[in-house]
Length: 167
Image 1 (spheres, helix red, strand yellow):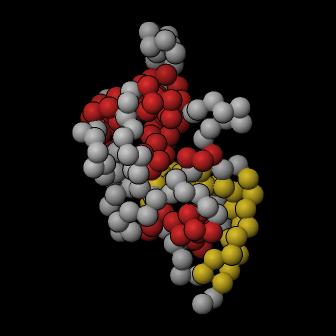
Image 2: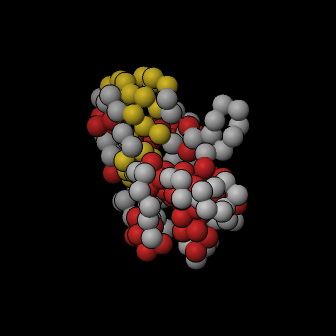
């Protein structure tokens, strides 16, 4: 086993952590850094449960070697909540729209939704469905998830006010 040290930024904080050179980022984040929102699902990039943002791009960490994360900025669900406990708009929209059931897949879906919200664009429901097509959710019919993402995109990008009315 050959070990190296990864230096990167995780959830806004500089991190240095040892890892095996054959290790995927999923293992480093979940097992070594204790970021339990990064879930082990399929391990072949089909379920999206391990999705995080790497330099702002939604990425399946089961397919991403830890070595590739050197110098990168990584964001997980643990880093979204404000210091005062206020939820991120995407997280709040998921609660408001009852888009969470068992919660296993939700952190990965939220991180993909974050990429959409941060783009500053608006999306149709079909475009949101397509953007989330790399995620499997066994508990829902996706309807509430799509509605939550649509709500967050519109709220953050100024299409609606916080009360749901036109901005």
